[in-house]
Every structure is written in structure tokens, then in C-alpha cells.
Length: 237
Image (tube, rainbow, N blue to C red; front, side, top):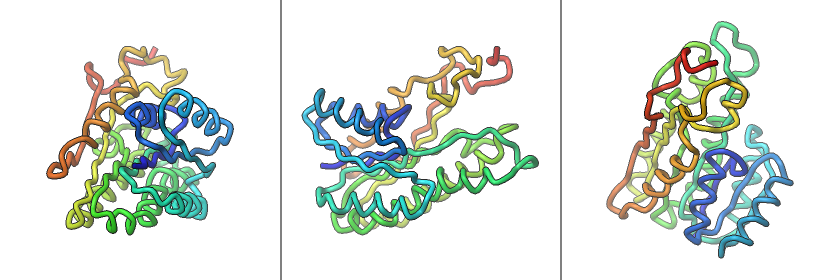
């Protein structure tokens, strides 16, 4: 059984790859850096009893999403889950918006949209499988200074909700993941104490648990926040 993970060499994506590999699932992963993908492949195949396939792609570009999707289909193996994790964070307000909005939409939304469409027939043929769409608290609550990012994540929420309805007749699960502040590179240099941020491993654990529910159950939303609540201005030093 193959688990597909985009944006898999760092942060939440890497934690997700680790937890599935540790439970003997083969992986097909992608990121923009080929050396990091090669390192991941060598590391996981030496530590776990799994196969790791990879293809270097920039998923903000439609043609490269299509290349990756076709590569996945060429592997023939049944797909257990597609985890649309790739994303980018750029803090910018709507009134100061520039070309960053298109880049955020291409990366955070359209990569998932195109890849899901390419793989959807495979899931429908199987009549099972699970799609996880990694959104954010920013996809359900606005915050000052994050308008452009929020737009891309609100759009991801809408995509995921509608996908859930369309795939329901085929017994394919769809889960939207809405993490609050999580300890990833996005917070590097922010001055926020790491104890105010959730470990990436916690998000991966929640995703793995949702994947392992019975075929009669679909966890539609995973919402997780730091124990102290959302980050606020007093958290920045």
C-alpha cells in the first residue's frame, strides 16, 4: 500500500512520512530539492522495511504537478492515502498585495486540486482510499497581516469540503487538517518560544490515527491548537 505525500522533506510532511514508514507503508514523496529527497529515501529505506519512491517537482507549476501525478500512476501499487501537504507561508496583508497571491494559490491550493484530479480515477477504481488536505487555522479564522495566506487556506477548506461530498459515494475518505501554530521553519527567527508551538509529530500522529479508523468512519476535520491557545502579540519577543 502506497502513501503519497507532497512537501515531504521538512516539517509536518516529514513527520507524516516518518510515522507511515515506521508502520511499514511504502511512500511516494515529492519536494523541490532532489538532494533532500535522496537523503530521505536513503534514511527511510535503511531504518524501515519500506520502499521510498520520489520525484523532484515544484508543485506551484501545473505541468510539474501533472508529471508527479503520472509518475504516481506508473507505480501501479494501490494508493492508501494522498496527503496534500505542500504549502508556503508568506505574511502579507490584502491591501499590500502583489504577485504573491497567485504564488500562494498555486502552491497551497492548485497543487492539491490538480494532483487530486489526476489520482481521483485511481481512488474511484479502488473504491477506497483517504485524501488528507493540510489547511490551517488561517483557513477558518482571519488574522491581521496574513490576508493573502488566509485566502489560500480558506480556498483549501472549500476545496476539501466539496471533495468530501463528491467522493462520498465511492467510499473514499476526505479529511481536512487545520493545525494551529506548529514548530516548523515558518517560525524560525520569530522570537516565539518553542513551548508555545505544537510539535510536528503531534500533527502526524493525529493524521495516522484518522487514517486507521474503520472503513465505516471518516474523520472529516482535524483541528489542533497549542495548549495555550493561538499565538498573540505577547508571544513575540
